[in-house]
Amino acid sequence: MLNALDFGVPQKRERVIIVGFTDKTNYERFSFDFVKQPFNLADILEKDEDVDPSLFASDTILEKRKNSTKDKEVFYPSVWHENKSGNISVLPYACALRTGASYNYQLINGYRRPSSRELLRFQGFPDKFRIKQPPMLDMEETLRQINYSDDWIELL
Image (cartoon, rainbow, N blue to C red; front, side, top):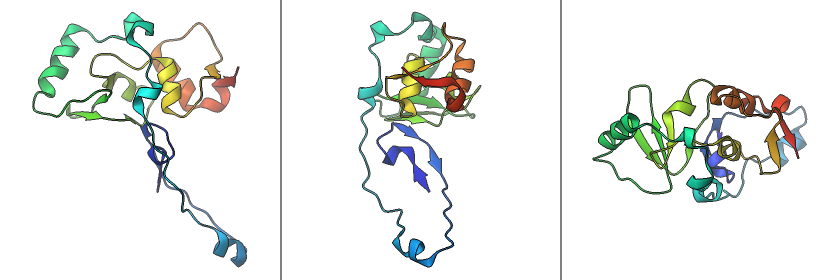
């Protein structure tokens, strides 16, 4: 099992990788050993003043999140993830991004949704990549484009 967190990307994205060999020499030389790369969530977050105001949560959501985390250790920077049962986890990384799902449940520092640039950074895209179709579409469409990046992401 490999996890993007181990490769310097601030997103928990676990994947099973299966490798097969037809040659015993290649099998004996192969190793999944690697040096884990650290990540820093602060490095990928944009300044709040540079983020579209529509990404900030409503007062109702802010109050709900505040009440749900009153007995939890809250730290910054963080991504607050709400699971299907309504439990809020305060994490130093983003959870796997799913079209039509996780975007609405993850809040940066508990008060705003991630920007499209941050969504790209969560998946390891450097800033020289962008979504091909400006102007920006709604966030569900943006997430779909990022998740199927071969078709929608281009190098500037």
